[in-house]
Image (tube, rainbow over the protein chains, first blue to last red):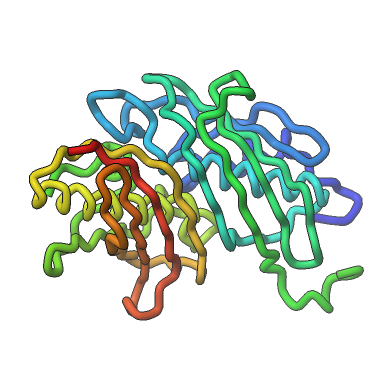
Length: 151
Length: 129
């Protein structure tokens, strides 16, 4: 992506969430700000963790927050560069509602030359009553930084 | 071993074997677990790690004659290397099983169990006796 084409999550998310693991999960774009992105994880019968309770498993929520984190980093930096998750912590604050969708909002609050720091919440519509909180560190996996102008 | 969750089965996670009392779980590389082209998705890898943790803990609770209700408290994953397009395995270890909580350590690898591509610690609420 050229330097004058700023990363736009609203336009990029549909391309990044319609295939592979994110596509299998059915992640969709909801909203974004200068340093945050919110995605939706629609409820689906084959994503539950306990069949009898019809509650989304914890795994899909991790994937939701991982993807929202990546988009938040690209949104804050304005550049779509390859990144890898280094460390991701998820606190499961409560179970999601049966047959309920979950929304994941991640905020990139700090970037260095090679690292990006993210926090976020997974919620069901009320940001003050989250299902989970996350904290993550991501690393740039760009090629030799000396080859990137200004890198 | 108890059935895997619908989510785990959907990802393609299967039981590869049992060493001692420890289940070894496996996931094939497929579109459902792919992140960047040709690389395993970190979220799918986290799902494999958690599934391995619950599989071991459920068996341990059963062997102890305890209720098998389990609720996640938290999970921290260290991603050590990029997952290649090949089968991935995971195995957990119970660090501490208490009356109310269990602390587990889980590792995932591809070719060589001594060279993990991810390691995780997870805390789980277990039903009291």
